[in-house]
Amino acid sequence: MPVKVWELDPKGRLVSEIKTDWDVDVLLDERRREAEELDRQLDGVLDNAATQVEEVERKVPGMPPEFLRAWAIGKALRTSAVAEHPAVKGERRELLWRALARKCRLGARADASTDDRWIDLRPKGAGEPRREGGKLDYFEMCLWLSEQDFAHARSTFGGHIRNVWQMLERPTLRVLKVRSALQVLLVASGNEDLTRPSTFAEMMKTLRARWPDRGPGSAKRPVHYSFDELKAEMESVLHSFLVGTPATSA
Image (tube, rainbow, N blue to C red; front, side):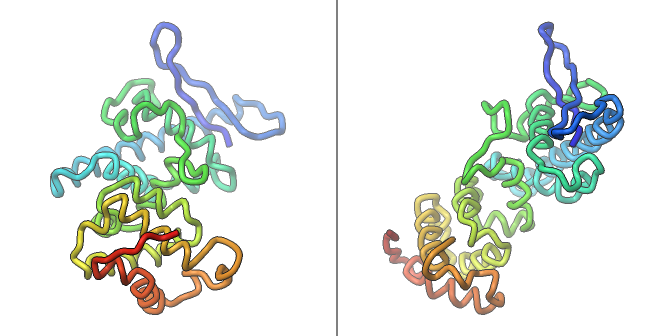
């Protein structure tokens, strides 16, 4: 995967380098065209993400910015053609995320100009892609979060990025069907306190105990249920939370 990675030279000027994670010898100049085309597409992704942040902020003022930005960048990645680019398709995405993180941090456009709107799209203080929740990359989390539209994602996680990681780091709970069923149950409960990070974490522990990643009870997972079956089972498992008397999970 050849990508264009931006950095600052000793004089503070934007410079770039073509990098690849291939083990075989390649002529980087031959791959520069692909890397530069991909870099221009990433400009479009970040422009789209910044625009979506502005649009949602106008419609839903007061939304926690880290949650909104993560959803927006995931949505922009999902709706772009980046994942189908010849430089990316079939390859590990870690180097792509590194290149994208640099573009955000430096605001580096493909023509070496800068765009300050991009700098806030990733959490500040992380120069390289941040890994959390079982070594998952930040941009992978953004993609996962954006599988729901913003209104549904907001009501599922209460706008808390910590809640997003709590669910994502548990493999059996990652399927969209689980989020969709949980969102329906949370809205029906009318209890916004259920998305407080401390309470949400307990709910995730309870669901993981019902559907562990391995060992006894791991044979049938949420992905094997119909949506109605899954929602009914989750309602039963989370009953003590939904009626207002949550029990502490082991």
